[in-house]
Image (cartoon, rainbow, N blue to C red; front, top):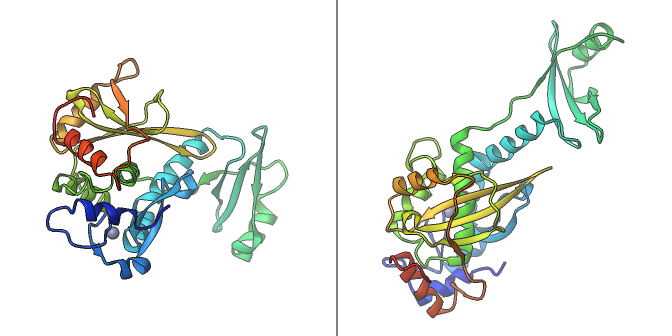
Length: 298
Ligand SMILES: [Zn+2]
């Protein structure tokens, strides 16, 4: 990461009404260069535990809030998919309950899907442990185990998926068009995931055949940016998010996205690698015109 790269773009094309060295892309608060060094943190996108990399800067508060509010829900929803499949190499917290109190344990799935129940005596009440040891966990006895509940609220998962796409796009294109108030609703949805600020939904988990990256749509029915990225746990999960241009209503984009299925051909062009939307004025101008127009070519 090159810290403060976005400053250069702000100097080139300052969004109207904004005067600062760096603006957090999530809360849009301004930070002067001196304060920025203490208040901004490098953000992994997607989160590190899902295979992300540090690609951008956000303020500490946004980073922490998103971590506990939404990122954990995305991680645990992926974990829950893998737990249900009993994938080799996974483990989970489980509870054993029978009469006297509850015992906490870890259920590990081995290489050949054999299962191990590890009970850590230090993290259980000694009385409960001895009760289970002497009365319940006996040879040939059958016990009931329950998965510990995971945090995986669908609205929060959705907000985390959107946030990753938004920050991937921001890391490449800076404030070329994302400073537009059109995206305030998107930012608001990320920061307050529960109410429906945006319609459902701007993303799909369909298996996409193109590599991870940012694609410009070459069809005005779903004009915008397809941000394709991977979430990595034991398995790989591909996500495709459609971030419309400021000219396209979110509801319209959602409806068009819903029509796309596994058999649909989607016309896209990859955002060219050799164009620098941070420092090169010509490239910024071309992307700006694309975002605010209807021409299909960049
Ligand atoms: Zn912020």
